Length: 347
Image 1 (spheres, rainbow, N blue to C red):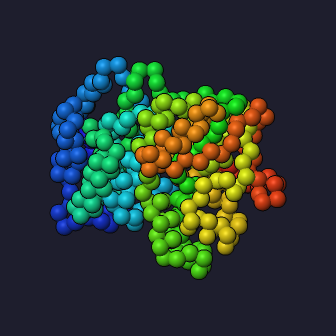
Image 2 (tube, one colour):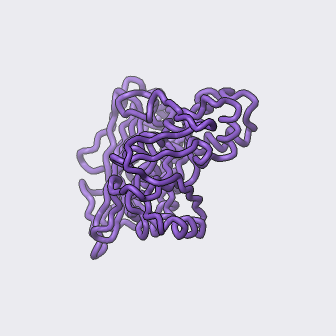
Image 3 (cartoon, rainbow, N blue to C red):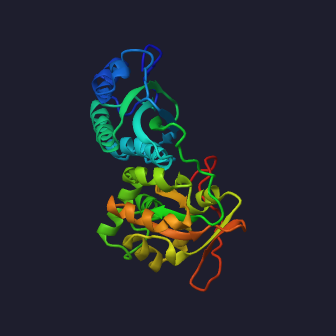
């Protein structure tokens, strides 16, 4: 966010204030305070940051942009947008066994934002930083003829050589997953159409599911357990079926749908409309950790996770046969038209 940053007023500048923000005010008023505690960020006054990782540590870097109309709604609350932008990247770090440390961010605006929007956005980032233990260290601002786009690059630290890979699981390992599946996909449906499930859900159920879509919850408390036991791991962003296939590689997993961990709200929705199973299996945006462990470690992992307030479910054993099968109540494989989200296809 230095001399090369640009911020111009686009033709669709519908949110301009009487005295619109300029680049300097936007950065120094709303973003520079987010660098507190990060010495190498220089209060965003230079063209680059300097980071010195702790001795004996590797840097783990992940970047995952979010775009209005694809990953969030343009009229979502600015603090929810900010939280999600950082959370989806921190979730990747968690699955690698890394502790969040710092991040950079690019903001491409279709119009100059007003001060209230920026204040709310920065407050959302501040809350996310506090929750995840990292700070802003740099980035860029610009304008775009397209929708609002936010690119976060998250940086974590892990003991040298200890990053958890995603394709190192082996036949005989057990596959475990944190939290519950499908809440975000169902929340997206409700966000688009509040009456999507009729009277099947209470207002509280609907609010819970929408909240899971708006504000992912990276499982930071599980990082030490993953470092100690996980043989492979990734976060579920593109859908359970697709990401599970990535985890097991050439292996296989067969799991009854009834074994998948669902929230009470999701169970109500699926009971009312069984076709929603496809959203549970392939909807994506869960940001739960899917990981494998040796069979002798399953009990210890579940206990350690419970001790830090994270629910973990054992889904079964990786077999030598290839493919992921989820079985219905009759023991038949559930057929899904798609296995998950494709980044070159709109949701």
